[in-house]
Amino acid sequence: MHELAVIQGVVEQVTERLGDTRVTAIHLTIGKLSGVVPDALRFCFELAVADTTMDGAILEIDEPEGRASCRSCRRDFVLQHPILLCPCGSADVSVISGREMLIRSVKVA
Amino acid sequence: MCATCGCGDEAGTRVTLLPDPGVAEHGHHLDGHPPHEHDHEHDHRHDHRHEHKAEAKTDRTIVLEQQILAKNASLADRNRQWLADRGVFAVNLMSSPGSGKTTLLERTIATMRRPTPIAVIEGDQETPLDAERIRTAGCPVVQINTGAGCHLDADMVMRALLALNPQRGTLLFIENVGNLVCPALFDLGEATRVVLASVTEGSDKPLKYPHMFAAADLVLINKMDLLPYVDFDVHRFSADVHRLNGRTEILKIIATANDSLIHWVEWLTLALDRSGFVDDHLDRVHSSG
Image 1: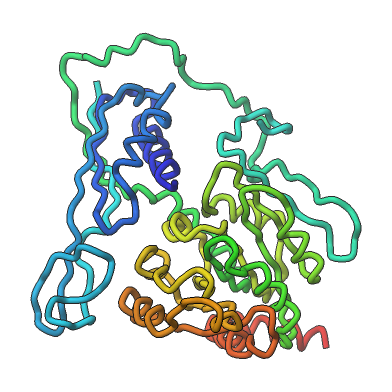
Image 2: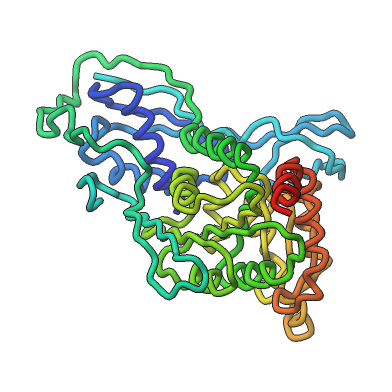
């Protein structure tokens, strides 16, 4: 359940940046290959923000899909799993997106 | 709650340095806090009971674009620098519970012929049992108990490093909390990551826990002596590891049989040589000899 630690990290960073400013929404990007489960983040969120400037805030999460680029057939493709295999059969691929874990923005009152 | 300063310790993490091997005393409890100055008050800068007006008229959007794990990443970089400055080579050892991490470390301590000092940081949710085993094996050890936590993070490791104070040229093993999920995500500042799996766990583990195997520099398959008794497909396991991670090496071992650890010890020795810390180590040996 590393999602609790991840969401606590979000709370800490927002507090560091914004101090006492009341936050009404938090917008995250959690890539589908990141190893973090958005539903588990939502589950922990209420607990993590209790008695903070983010208490009652809305949590929005974008989940960009995994994408990779194949060096053999030079095509980009969607990566459903962290298994690095192109539909052409080549394993010589590099991940372009899907591993992101970002605090995009916050809304403040 | 920290007994020294009264500040909260919400994660409940405890760092305990065990006495030197051979000294029959209980470990000193370090209250699990980094050595920050305590001449200031830890009071809050604002009142939590003020009125929240959530339905405020005009909410403003502030763009942050910050990495969520930025804090752990910067603490991990600090650990890496701290370790490099002291010529300490750190191995983050990860596996599910019961794969044989502690047994492997006990045997590695006994098997390494090289005059390299070895130290261990043990991570478990509770109990100092593993640290006591390592201490009995004869090397300095610090136990981190994470309480509710399911993984070690860079901050815990720095607290353990300060307690351990490893000597120059040390080969440091960080035995992570037994868990194939969470530890994969947290950089500790280690030089290398080793993932241990055992044949009793089943050969589907790489595909079930891909993040762990994707992050490994070396994968060890333990308990090879039990292979005739279990349904474990070594080829399938190895092929799946390489589908996730083309650069990792795979070694088969029996942690309880010293002869089977030769390649593992060779791998460690080579990794240590490549790290560049070996020169410091040789200086130390020569100056003391």
